[in-house]
Image (cartoon, rainbow over all chains, first blue to last red; front, side, top):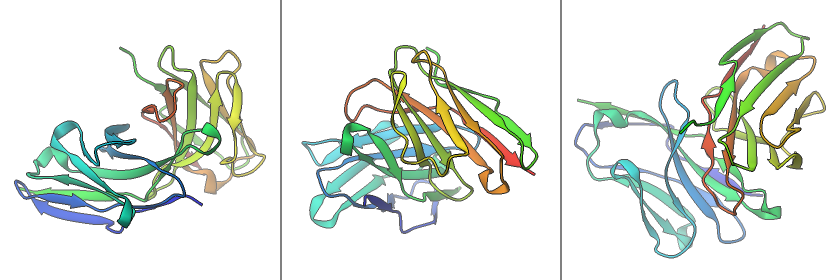
Length: 115
Length: 114
């Protein structure tokens, strides 16, 4: 069965520091991979997605992610974190079996940013 | 343009009662999804509509949960005989019908069963 693991429940960084959020997936075929961000009281917003092609994907708000098939990983990175990046981040895999495109989410990583 | 909207934003109900949660997708989006997000967890898939029909309802936890989308636009998630364990945020998302299309999420309905 498809699954997504986000090993870090909570991460704290200083503003201006670099960031990497880890994501590992389990999926038999070539996955569709997504990173979403959820701010308090807000809906989920798509940061970036990977379908095929270049394994380094650029997203909004200065985020990028790299797909590594050999490691079954899709880690999210940002070179310099801003205080406004504090939120919950979810990695998801698109389970396109039967063409439903339902998303399977990880449990999330809460990012806290100190000034 | 208008995004996905959900009503009500909050719903408090007593155990055993019936509730309906409404989702208005983005105009023109033929695919509609319901997810449930419990505290401290990621969203969990419930059901997927392609047009008016439920193409995948494998995530519905039991037969107390039912969803409809009679005209291929607005959808209603219905929960009968609510239980305290049903308390969660219910999220709706819509997308254009193409494989891997971005799903746009609504703000959710927070359901509390007392």
